[in-house]
Length: 218
Length: 218
Image (cartoon, rainbow over all chains, first blue to last red; front, side, top):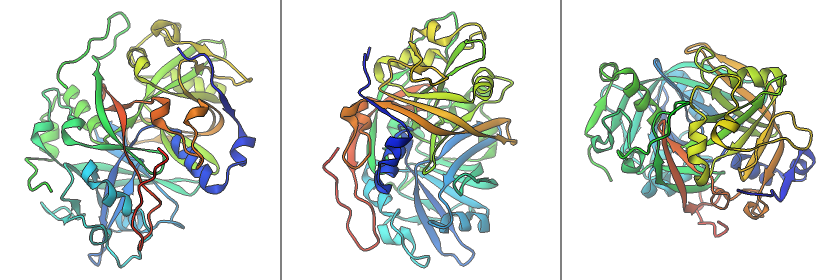
């Protein structure tokens, strides 16, 4: 058990950080983040690919996923494309793709596709409007449900319904879950730190009067 | 590069899953998730602690964090407490705390504090209304900004402003970021799989015409 916390910060400490440090600090606080590439296309066929670390599960039925998109004043291609075309893709990032995935966060002009710029492959398949990332072991096609404005800082939460999922069959377990370890998906912490995920323990469904069991199907 | 994806699922495949498999499958899709314990208290002093894997960074200035809360029909203690008291805490989960953290997801009656039930320590300090988890190496105190209803499935997004942060000083880097590895924070994948985070690479800020550098301050 830890007995002391050496640092206690409040608003005056936050305000003593410069802008870049402040971004680094607060981006560290949520802990592990998902590492996904979001693929979109506009009506003229111009593709776009962007690194997103804010994808979050909303619910299984209906099957909904959300992500937080930065203010349009700083990054508008993804949000504009997905509103125009009503569809986008989410693609897990693996260790061999980390440098390419991170490079998509550079500010390329609209007429440059990040797929081409970083060397990943845009894959159009099964009549889905938006491009998947061919190199990714888990690819999800979503249809726009709603954009929720977050008025406090001009970000937006985009809610999508999951329409198509492509994945490596070896990762599927009997219970319906996917082994993220078999897929090779990585995590992000802070703004720029890529981390591998290593199995610690899988635990049984918790009930008040029962002890947890460690699941062996990992 | 991967050349085939053995599995391609659409709505008919989703609908072939039973309810539990469906929850497992869709909870796997976002990838890595943060592992946090949310501490609250009601007006009578009854504390509550719940495992939340949906905390997400919203912005650094103002310093905002959000989380998705399940429908009140299935889990109402956390949301009711934080609306009543306007404050809550988010506390990183580490490997030694994983069993206790997971056990908080059991359906305890309102009069039972999960702190007591699982053996974690509620810590009230510096006049903050909600209880921190003493065993956690990163503790965040938040004030309610807004609850956003997600009408599509009766979940809610709770937006909070970060007011207090306690952390182990050794984890702070010069650039303002925190080393999640030094804190020992774990990740969750799917509903029940706890994973350690292991350094792969830290990358420099991406620019269109520059090569990425691997940062040495890890």
